[in-house]
Length: 354
Image (cartoon, rainbow, N blue to C red; front, side, top):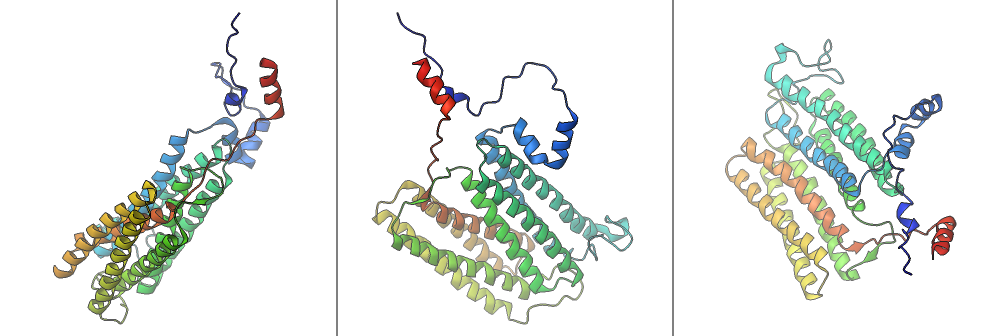
């Protein structure tokens, strides 16, 4: 006589009980827990799918890039002091007024997007905290994002209070780049396991990628100097600029760009030569294509007297270049899933079923 197959008890370890259609009673203890630790309260009652977690983190990454683009729009339209103070827009108004015109709307709109970014990062934190089993490393990256957003908001206020000092503007952009780095790492960590990282390529390839990363970091840093010395000061009034010839700094920026492109091509050639896995090859190819597009925009804007639309596109391109750099670094290793042991009770049930 054939026995009916028994369900594997391990399948139900992290499944919530089926919904019976009744509205649960909310007790005082539930309210107290929700107030005391709202994340734990939500995590006990909701489990997001892996796809939802990845989408929540991707949304925070996209918003980080978007707010860099809108920040560039503020500068390129001369609206950097559209709201002349911070945290209020004026001494007497929290929001932009009709008298402030177009520039006030642009600057205040960019400030409002900070709240959208906070919401996106908060959603990523909630989704990471509610994942079963709880992945602390992913949740911590979400909290790092949150505090970086708070720090960059304060730094943005300082930028306004010091009259768009170019050094503070550069620091504001570099902190945004750090934020994008954390968001990219969090996105990747949500797509892999929590096991110990295992390298997919040799030590010499990893060293080459580190040289590439350092060169790309210098490229981004020098780009902020070009911005600080260039003609787009961020406001129509007299704004202090970095006392350097922006064309000379632009040439240095171009040289570093060619160094990054050359190292990327060398990396792709080495990966092909050592028959590397497809992951690092794809990420290197993506980086190479993004660099070519960014270089084309850079040269066109230089020879057309820096039109605002191309400068804005170049700023967004710098974010995409850096994301591609981080993804190349992360593609050099893999993290397998941790083996989840079955509790003793589950093992006993499995044995008795047999």
